[in-house]
Image (cartoon, rainbow, N blue to C red; front, side, top):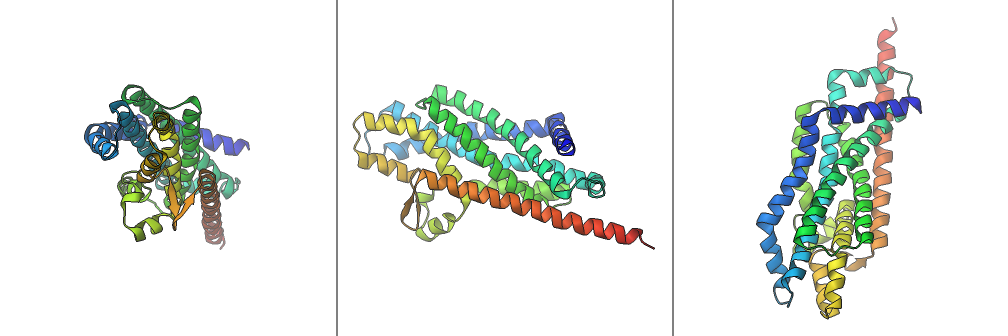
Length: 304
């Protein structure tokens, strides 16, 4: 346990010691928040008000909920690739080789990297959530205390999920150029395939069915449900027909469907938790096999 905690503390300290890396991780959600609110806010607003009689404050609340849920659901995965950069740096610097020949079990070292990356991701994403809540306070706040807590819980779960994905991918990367290239691809593509940048409901039928197999989709839907729960309740309280409320939920993926069957929030949690547990197990297993093979090769080289 002392070796595990030592590696975790080391990795967290090294990440936050690199001010450029921390700033880059935090500035990305901030830039997305500015771009979304400045360039997409009016588009979202017109989409909500088309055919519906919604007041300005309600429309602003819907836009706010969609924006912050999109940013946070994407950030939990993309930031994880930044915080996991140290794993590749250690390979390049030869630190990983020192760990391979140490008496510490490979599974302990692997899990320590995972935990440290998750902790760093969580700190950055909670900071990003703070920025989003400040934006919501000015743009249109309808969230209750329970909504805020559920959003924070979603961040924890999505950070676990994102860290697991980045950890598995980073197992096969050995240079900083490779991780930069992969990080760029993930940043550009993940938001689309998880329904953050473009609602799944707006895609073609076959693509909706394909994306419904991806666990990240359910993470975005969870975040959207909790970020927009308050304003949707306010709409109902103001007398808008339930059919219209369901129409809004369908259009922004609060209601998610798996082959025409609506997926409940509890099932969304179950899918994301199961996928995260499987990914963590796969990551630890890959590292154990690879490091066992490395140790075997090192022993063989030492033998005459």
